Amino acid sequence: MDPIPATCLQNALKRRAEVYEARRAGFHANLNPPRIVFPAMRTLVLLALLGVGGLVAYNYNAGRDLFQLPGTSAATLKNTARETSAEVKGAAAGVHTAVNRAEAAVTAAALTSKIKAKMALDDVVKAADIDVDTDGSVVTLTGDVGSAGERRRAVRIATETDGVTKVVDRLRVR
Image (cartoon, rainbow, N blue to C red):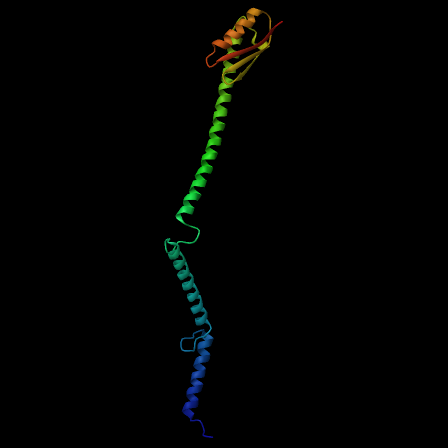
């Protein structure tokens, strides 16, 4: 066997020391890189490109925008917008109905208050003995009165009040 020349042995030891120092420092520039990272990266990039290519082919075949995701067509978005609009309109109608009911209740209470105030100011009618109920513009008078004249006067006060269309007389003469 031939002896290894000293220069060759020195070069090998020097290279080995360089590799050791480089690895200890975390620097791999002059070293052989790990072969596992590049194939994995290559595979991921290839899969991503295949996915994009599949999406483009699917959309091209369906006659849509090339990079449009499935299920997000313009027709689907329009239908969703219409459904949402219908829901908002339904909720608005409910609010409108509630407002109308509140206005009717306020109007009914205002009519009742007007009639009771007129009766309280009247010398003939005893307002404490008469109940006034209002349903829309229809007023119902109930209770006991002292005379037929008091009854006629109470009905007349209610009839002459603005906003009253009909008076239901359920007054009893004592």
